[in-house]
Image 1 (cartoon, chains in turn brown, purple):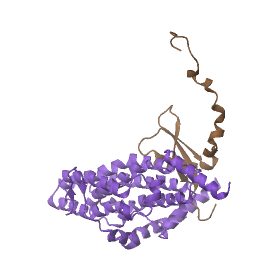
Image 2 (cartoon, rainbow over the protein chains, first blue to last red; image 1 turned 120 degrees about the horizontal axis):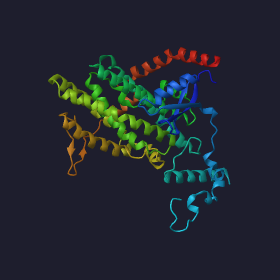
Image 3 (cartoon, chains in turn brown, blue; image 1 turned 90 degrees about the vertical axis):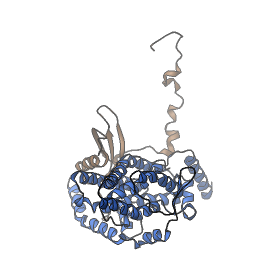
Image 4 (cartoon, rainbow over the protein chains, first blue to last red; image 1 turned 45 degrees about the horizontal axis):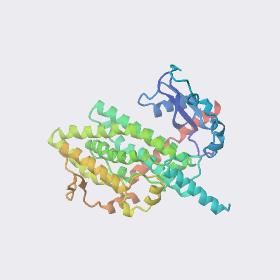
Length: 97
Length: 309
């Protein structure tokens, strides 16, 4: 790390809106350790009760797909329409299925 | 394909994405001029949030009640948060936060010139919230649709938080206009000083705004300076009338369609303040540099502690 670069590590912040909900990416922040990362995330992203739980993870630990490759990357799902319920035709009059 | 042809194709694909309202993300290809424009605009926006804490901090210890002090403190804390959201968005373009701060300290990066005006009495806290935050909101709401994803997402969060700022400012104005004659005069005086600088916040007239062309084509900006300024004028004047504030513009006219046309803006003042000759330019920057330097040992200690763990 550059000697001048003393703003700490970059963390990504995920917030759970209420118990049982999924964690949603909220943004990122700088922090010097795990404890400060959590406290900074609380102060920066939940000043108005936006959540009941927070995850923070160092940005460098996130492995991401490339948007430029998204077409070929998601290609395997393209021709499998039988994975959707609408693919199947049910006899007329049959209910609750 | 030759390199030039490849770039021509990339630029075409890029513009097609913009035209289809698909957001550009940090790792996507983008023209250098687009990246540069964003770096300049988002960092200027971030610096404005941070420097904007100073004129308000000026009144924290002298707020007239515990209620108003708590509210002002919360507002200033929001501004710090907004600065951080925006620095994060700007950093995604490949510039470190230290670099942004260095550019600010060297005078290479700007911040909104509105914060180079002093806040002389408590009514200024009202006028700042009502007019300055009000003008900022008009601009920021359109920026929630800006083409760069990280910037747009930061703007969505900021807009959600910003509307309390404007209402708290207006509430102060209402209280002062319902008060003694002296208080009413203070409120009017604050508006007299803040009105024109607020109109200048939207930037030069469209015809004199050299960077707007590309910014609109690339949908970094979604509306022109004059269009945003007119929105602000039309929204604000009825709010002033409702509490008996006079807009300090003798040439202001109401048109047949109910909208307003303001008098000429004094652009010499605007360019003078931008180029460093406003009442508080030196003070604002000096304060930021001092605070940053005084925090150096804290950052170093935190880094050392982090390395030990």
